[in-house]
Image 1 (cartoon, chains in turn purple, yellow):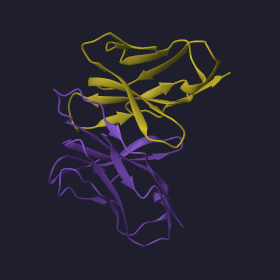
Image 2 (cartoon, rainbow over the protein chains, first blue to last red):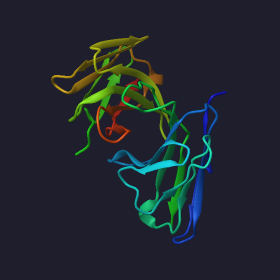
Image 3 (cartoon, rainbow over the protein chains, first blue to last red):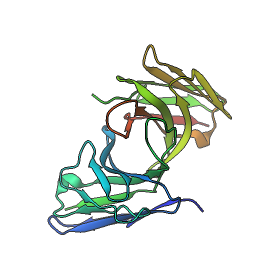
Length: 116
Length: 112
């Protein structure tokens, strides 16, 4: 089954304790992206990747890191989490996202992070 | 403000009625997409309309796009309780960053 898988689904942790949220897709998609969703703010893009070893900042990259060593995986790293990073996080992928491309994004089920 | 803004923010109707949601955006787009999100779950793609298209249908969904007004609408006909969800428009920009820009969404409630 074609899917985007995020882990963990829920996490409660404390300020400053490094954490990684994994994202994996089995559709051989080139484009992957991370969003955070906060009440009243909709979805905001954190980082995206056009392909392996190609990543770029989205609208709210501060406090986050990503890597794209393999096509299927796009982990989100919080080196020193803070309470303002408490949010619902989504990973998404699509075949491509160039100007000539008209492809929808496939979303994971989300990861709810609480940073105390 | 965001590229995509939905209107209304919340909509409550009776089952069987039609629901219309609107989306406005600011810059030129490659395409516009509508997504549905059930509470706390991931977004599910509903329909994509290209910038050179004016209307598109999928089942009970009808999407229109007016690039001169930089706006789109999503119509759900004969609504059902299962349509209760948040609906988001997302624009794929024509130039600049390669990304989808999401609006804040419309919360739709279908009352039985």
